[in-house]
Length: 184
Image (cartoon, rainbow, N blue to C red; front, side, top):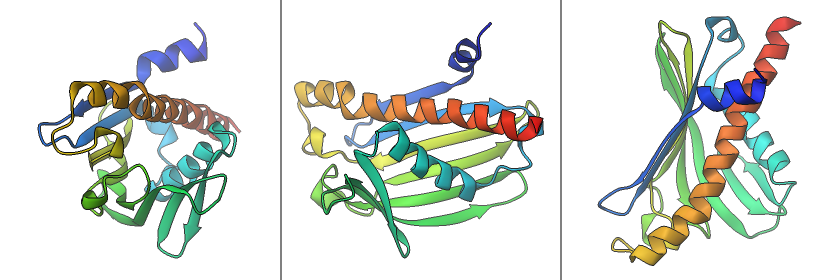
């Protein structure tokens, strides 16, 4: 069985537009314990940002300035999403890096500071669960707290689909990268 086929079975996804029209999207993979040594929330953030640049062929570029990170078009002043953080929390079983969604062209203006992009490592019996989650995000494409069915459909077919694909590919990339690290 190919690595690609195995990874498709291992990566899980949940996503929904909630009653208040905020979005939650959660993708995860459970990795064997042997991969836990090099994993940290800071490493996940670093690798994810680099992967977004690579995966989008530098169309979307993470720009880090102090305690803020922005996804901008070609590194320009057109900021798609801006984040504050990351902030790190956790204990011996669960560790998280959280970036608060603080602005950008893809965010409803009155919803700044509410959404979150988080990277979580959870130690379980079966292995280490790596979770990438967007929560309480209010995309501009939905338009308001009462979006039409057409806006919801358009959001799901565009921005939500792109996020899901990039995140699933990131988790597959992470799995392959850790496999190489552990093998060497």
